[in-house]
Image (cartoon, each protein chain N blue to C red):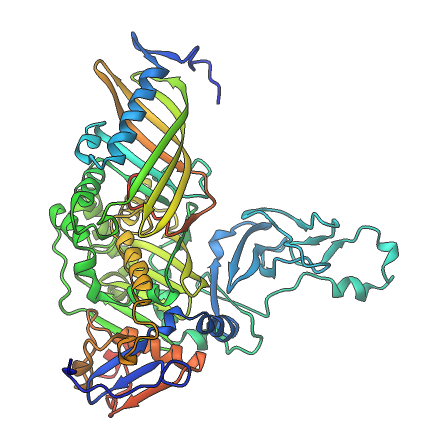
Length: 175
Length: 459
């Protein structure tokens, strides 16, 4: 996963702007906080218009979401529809909301693009609902648009590393 | 408190009926032990999964010689592969020597399956190909032949759908499928160059009995309330869902069919605004292609309605929106593993493929905008039916599936939003597992139609 354009000491340059691992970590930690607190409207603002939300299946071997089955393959309109749904009392699978607790670590700045930085990070999400406890383990593989005032998701991809979704471990929340 | 309606006394589970069907009271009930009890589950695995054709997978999952997938059916680990001559084979995934799981990969391509334990190896057509230290075994070809991989007793393929049976004496597959075979063929005819499954298989497990997943698929009644947010999303994209004039069919043998015309569009068949203008034009072109290839009548049957087909006991074919194949694998009374594939036209344009995937996963699967609410329903039922187990009043421990019986009694075709397709499933289930059924009153005179085509033929 090392790259000639990859970070040295956790810093990459996108156009003339420096992006540090600390900035990316801050972005991911803040995102995790918004999701754990179910502040979905604020979460939506972390996407650039036209951004994508993807969760590949557990047999994923790098296929694009336009050529293979996925768990989630949302374009921007669907992300907005998903947020609207999750805020509704009629989203039965998340009414009441799951309690989630996210740990994000192992953040690596992989490569700088023309206006983006590709990053990867590991996650562990504990989810609790209806007396059940579920653990989701995986990694993020995001493409972040670098803007003057911060970072935005261009592609937010959560790759589960489990062999399958355990009994009860649905993806009705944002992974 | 007095009962509002008289309820016939029923025995406790074990000595009483599991299905209570009463055409005077217009009531159909299933005893909740059917979802709950390990003993019932054991009977299902033995009597249904042990003696019925089961959907294993699709031929296109293993396109090349040597391709294999491993999967479990009725709890038995299997190897689903294509041998060196291109023939589909299904073996028990267990070394004939000492029973070790032979292939521990979920998929791949190989000429040989080698057991790691003592290094016995088998060709992909099952012959014992390597027997280390064979000088200590009988110098007799019959010994090697006796150690060939065990094939499942029966294997038959209909339109690329591969079925197996663990009982050598099951009837021919087409006999088992009955009218369901026709509906599988309709789906298989969609693609000018055929149909294929895609990689990217949804594997998930629900904390619910497998029959709850069957009921849910055959139940149009739940759609509007359960999928309220999805219906709302469609409305915002410019499509109004309707449940009017849509019907359910008992195909016999426990198989069922819902034919839906107002639920949503269907890629390449029935356009709706969220599919976009390019797809609108392609839908017109696609219809012409279908008519030229199949004739106008068959083209209309393929294209004009969405279908949800249940093939008893473990296959659901969702020919709606896009297309998915769903397989149910019961693990315990309260747990079901689900495997779901996207099913697409061979050679369709990239933009159509992308639209199909986006559309389908926006609804289905544990991450969709709709299926999670179905899963919530299975799991909430499974948790809820504990409440009335061994209740002081045994009349409380039943689930009701009476909707539409009055209409059915008048000889009318059951609507998709009634519960007739569930009733026919349960009747067949009771017959196969040997559960007793209590029937009171006279069922409707006419035998249930075997599908819209048969219903038309009978007019």
